[in-house]
Image (cartoon, rainbow, N blue to C red):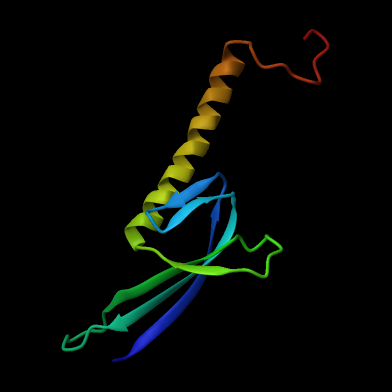
Length: 111
């Protein structure tokens, strides 16, 4: 069976976990490897994901002890969505505080 491998980097801005495989990990950039297999018997080329693996700790971590953990496409997508939503929530809270006049501005003398 014909297969292909794709390596990419995903970045999390906040503490995250992925499914049951990856417990709490710090924010950072992580190497992800996807292996796909060709679906034979079709009149066009199509692939399905055979495996998806994330390497922990983050690329920035100075550790020789790396682990490769199997994850699912759906769990990775959900973790990235939670990370993005968490960032959006932070922006909304900051905006609300600023509008309410609760944010101190270091460059303003009247605070």
